[in-house]
Length: 213
Image: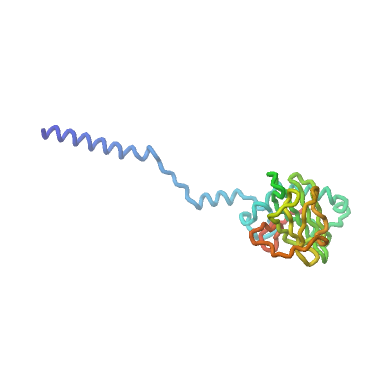
């Protein structure tokens, strides 16, 4: 009886040892250090604007796509090709910022473009554009300041815009084909735009890369 008990005990211990030995190979746990992942991600980022001290990861996703910047650049180069050739647009004016946003909920982001410099800006404001996702002009705004607030309300299927122009916030509505080009003659927006509304081209308060054309 004792011999039988010893045999069973020996078999049990041998089996248990074998299980413990094999268990690490069944579900090997692989841990990748977090700092390694972070380093890989940061290394993969391309800084869209190397002229400033802002790191690539701080730029907003809607304002830093190199592909979108290329679309805007080609559009502006075509629009202003004559003045570029005549060198009317100098180093202070041949740059832009942009903000991508789906203004008409069709699943494609339009591109709001902001320009600066003496060629595009005066005492009343600056020139801005709304382009479609291929770079076609939807609207060109004059005497418009920054930022452009995108309202939650729609007119003719497009989001209303709130643009500072002529010393006041103006409510700019889509007419079915485009937005009115001169916001200063539009109705005043007498409310304070909500904090939760998207603010496009807000390069004064947010990190935006500047692109040249």
